Image 1 (cartoon, rainbow, N blue to C red):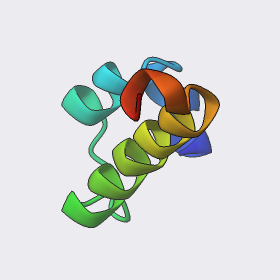
Image 2 (cartoon, one colour):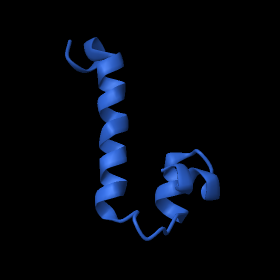
Image 3 (spheres, rainbow, N blue to C red):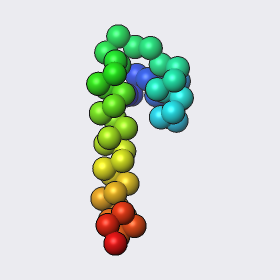
Image 4 (cartoon, helix red, strand yellow):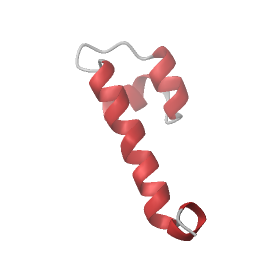
Length: 50
């Protein structure tokens, strides 16, 4: 992720769309998106689980 951020910027959507590193395949793209979603839910659980 750090390498991708250095090349493309910090916006995750831009990284997924534009970055083409050898170690950044489908699994890496998916893992980071899932991590961001889990972090969002953990910080606002009542919004998602009322």
